[in-house]
Amino acid sequence: MFKTELKIDGMMCGMCEAHINDTVRNNFKVKKVTSSHSKGKCEIISEQELGEDALKEAIDKTGYKMLSYNCSPYEKKGLFGFKK
Image (tube, rainbow, N blue to C red; front, side, top):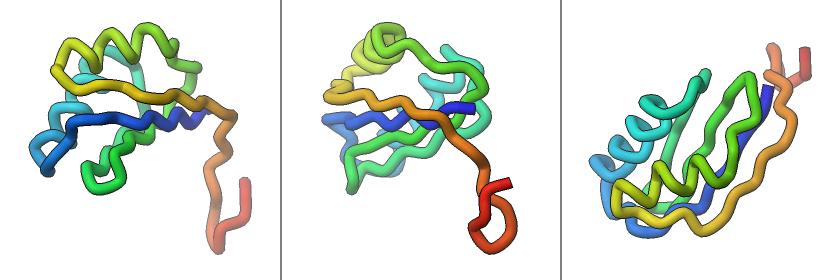
């Protein structure tokens, strides 16, 4: 599993967050995606690493701008915050 963190410019409200989340879900196979307009970021959990160029292209088409990309291995935490 991988956790991908994106910095995104242009999100102003909850509807903007929904546009980003829908774009990611419609273009990539993901387990979970959440966005925050106040923090200007999007977090994605997926089984496969998502390509930076493909993400940038999909997000840029929506009118928002992807500023940074960070992908790292992800382990789901179990009860009390311990890794499984």
